[in-house]
Amino acid sequence: MQEIISNLVFPNPAILFGLALLVLLDLITGIVKSKRKGIATASQGMKKSVQKLTTYLSLITLSLILSNLAKITYDLENHLNELNLGINAVCFWLVHLEVKSVLENLIIANTDEDGNQNEVAKLLIPIHNAWILKFKNISEFSYVETKKDLEKKIKA
Image (cartoon, rainbow, N blue to C red; front, side, top):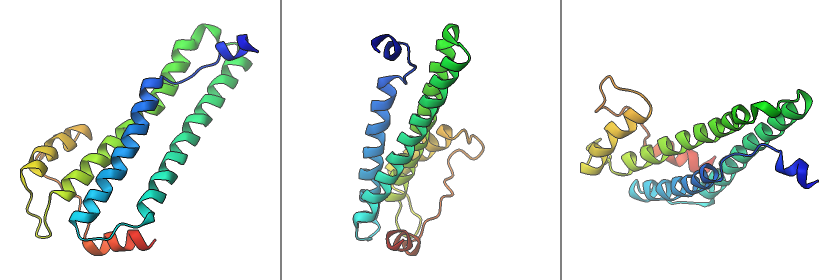
């Protein structure tokens, strides 16, 4: 049994830990964004984060199951690095999504209702756009979320 477990493919623990921290940071920045926009936070923010984390863990688990089944079924012992790279790529993609979400939350939290951005938002916009590989008009941020949109999200 120990031999079977030692030969399984697993994602890098540092990436998984980073992903968990980013989900928590996304929750915190979402709460800050809601408070700055004057929207009362409800359990919906926590519920959304738990659903997101559950979806992420399901995707990672499915990747693990499929990779390990492929390894066992097709005798891919010599390709462990490629299998590990595939699972780590899935985890890294999820980390990428979370960083994007955190940056958006911080930009929106530092933008007033008239669309005026403070220095923090102005600093984060090029970082956000570079993160999503948007280099044309790198200092523009076109994400529009009104107070009404936020209220609908909380009610949903």
